[in-house]
Length: 80
Image 1 (cartoon, rainbow, N blue to C red):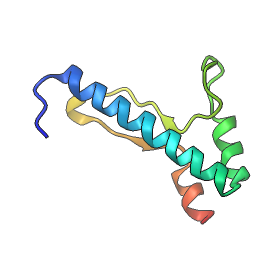
Image 2 (cartoon, rainbow, N blue to C red):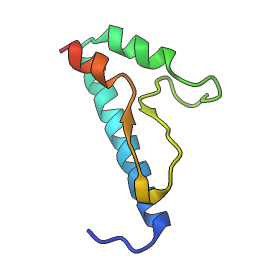
Image 3 (cartoon, one colour):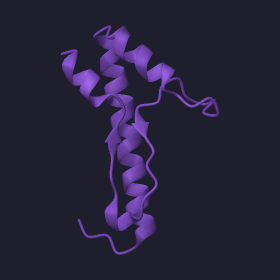
């Protein structure tokens, strides 16, 4: 896929992060991985009133150097 406008790239990344977070949290709930869910719940920023969990860590960088970081990735990996 070729994207010519930075706003389109940002929207694609936003949608990807939203979808993947919801899907992974849903799987964690199904598998009753409450220890991981509790870590994600504790990581949620207090100003985020519309969500229960903080899956992605927001890192401000230019779109040319976009980095995506999963909060608790090592902890999640070690728990499986």
